[in-house]
Image (tube, rainbow, N blue to C red; front, side, top):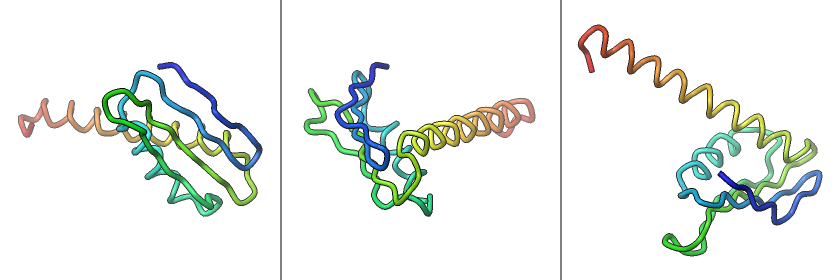
Amino acid sequence: MNLDVKKLEKNYLEISLVGEDVSIADALREILIENKDVEFASSKIDHPQVGHPTIILRTKSKDALELLIEAVEQLKTSVEEFRDSLKAAKKTGKA
């Protein structure tokens, strides 16, 4: 995955996820909007076939990039827990 940093300030960022669909951006947005220090979080894509998803984040006081990194870590943990649940279900025959 390549990142195209459109704007990076302490409390604001816009980063495009080149070569990805909007799924990751949407998942990160969902995590970010739960954070009390997030003033605004959005994901957008100009055109689904030729555009790249963009994450837009504005924070109240914390560093925007740090909050995005925290959201990535939360998403990673959630995916790992989901994977582990699937593996457990497969072993018990409940998948």
